Image 1 (cartoon, rainbow, N blue to C red):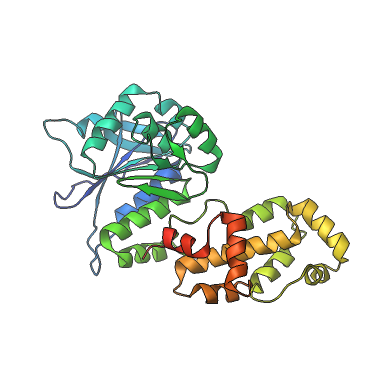
Image 2 (cartoon, rainbow, N blue to C red; image 1 turned 90 degrees about the horizontal axis):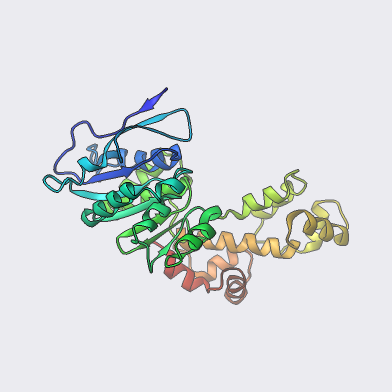
Length: 338
């Protein structure tokens, strides 16, 4: 059985310790994605690694993942031994199908609770939020997990303010994230908080990520939703054309012409396949494009409105209220990371 070992062989006492808590049934990517970020992060202008990384489980030894790869770990008790406790900077609870059993494992939950008292920062990736919630640390706090499990998290832990949309949420020293790649987004945000934007951007480039996603980004991809609904790709070329021409004035007749259909037949067929009217789908594309520009550029709201095809700020404001229940300026001020 292949195994993977990523504990720091000789932890540097002057570097912050990042501890990943694992258990049987974790999702391998929920671990190795954030682990790669922390394992490769370097201080600005240096090649010196910035963190010590550790992987720990209740009993130590090999832990089975959702793949053929096993993970080597140290016993959690070795970390929270009161006679010689490890100084923990960041504690990360990894997610996976095994979280259902892990949240009822009293020994594991007690270890996590004890370690949390000493940790500067506590995090969960995906379903790791269930283990974190079992400690009571999420009571009264906003939290997120993978969208498929948000309803279950809310049902099992009614004192937790579960949100479905964000890719990650930071509440004081506690961070929760959605599934898999969102754990990497959270880790990059933590590196940015600790080391500055330069090291975080360097890591993002090495990971070939298209951008560093902020907490305000949604874990739901509108593009993916359209592709899923239109699985045969009947309107794929239309969607590509729309994305490339958002700044232009586009009518339903224009879209119908692109598809060589009458306006009436096109509208009926499109709504049946995609689940939205053509006009609503186009407006949603424009809102998504505007969200990205508001978070990633220094463009004014007026310029963003024009570039995304709204024409003016008031039309964009009304569209934001329809789809996001907030204004462009409020969205930007709430989620943009300086």
